[in-house]
Image (cartoon, rainbow, N blue to C red; front, side, top):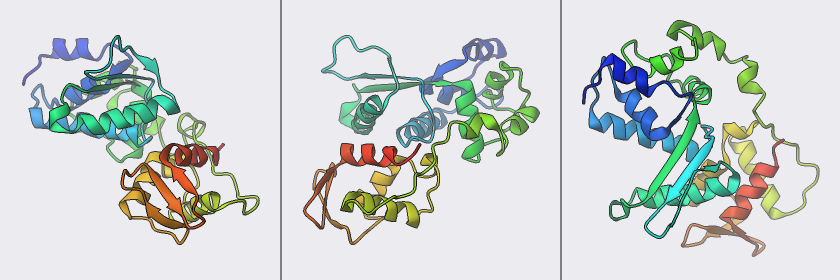
Length: 238
């Protein structure tokens, strides 16, 4: 796939783009893109949103059973529904599933920096998107450096455990300690849940994982659903 400079300039005019469009632009090197690269970038961006590593402004969720789907603001509830829809959309026979995220240029740039993907190759078309924000490729890196207020002001910090209240909280703080979590984006809630149900993280507080992978049973027989876990997890940060 090839694109002219005029075409690329049209693509990068908006400050907010869908993750689908960003992946397409990112794959273009010196005006040429490979389909496999586009699909790979789109999947990586979507996965980063689902894992709460990348901030999305809006989400669109639609499948064959949905009528009149529309864009909605990103929220914890929307993220959970998008996460489930995204998982099923990766199954070949569910290609009718559509999950799209709208992402602001500045948020995507911050993610590139944090994930070690910046700077981009000089021939990458995505650079023109950032230049639209009047940030040359050589200057943006310093703008979003590790001490940048634009990055740190959004970070939510872990609250200390005041007292040992229940097994669910004790489990969370054991997880935080093992993974040296200080800020929510050090280990987002969805990624933490994934570590538990995959067995990557184990604890004496966990009796077993439900077959559906949507709940865990603790040693005191308490059933902790995925939604309850995510809510408790995120509430530990302010």
